[in-house]
Length: 302
Image 1 (cartoon, rainbow, N blue to C red):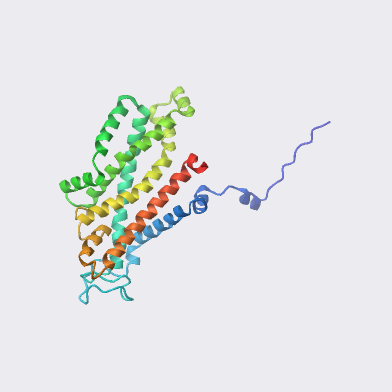
Image 2: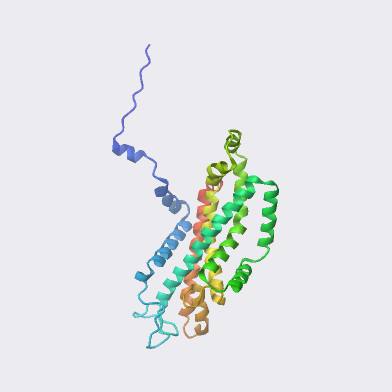
């Protein structure tokens, strides 16, 4: 008996497109909304704040530093959506521009910190030995100081400035979080494909770039997202104390510091920037928690 050849049903282009798995960039928001609704809400908050920061000249109805000659401390009304401060400046415009400065400092600080943590983590975890011992003892001494104290000392020496503040926050976040990348590196280092690459004669830089680094990107992304909230909080705390961004540039912490003297007569001067700061940090934290769960196969399975 002759074997009959199996006939494979042909698919039309429309059926092929329908049966294809959706791209990861399109499927990820759906998974985020379905499995992590709080994380999806955090992502929406982050996107709104990011768009407001990027489009601040279009969103803000007034110049944030324009001093009005008319009445001061105007309560929220149609002419000024969130009222004015003691110099007649529009609070809504200042909060929008303050978010621009705070998120810029947080973003660049996290980029610097993530680069630093990934570099230290994979080098320390992969080579081990005295290199790992040296890095870990230096990190122990580093994290013994509270983050806010270290940044305050550095800013006191260098003086207020956006780039010095960004450098200080990035260094503090990067060194402390490098241990998580080191743990991920130790786990990947023992995998069979790394041993196979080493047995085939692959050099250490190639193993680090082709095998170790791609497998520690997921925790690095999670650390970066969570670190944005921490960076914004540190920047706001220093600006509140007068050690952060110069006073001529509005920040959420600076607005809180300026408005506390008028808190009883004009409570919106502290409520509005405080709510903006809280929402931004909440959004980044919820998004970071959701990314941690979705990018970690063990947590996703649980």
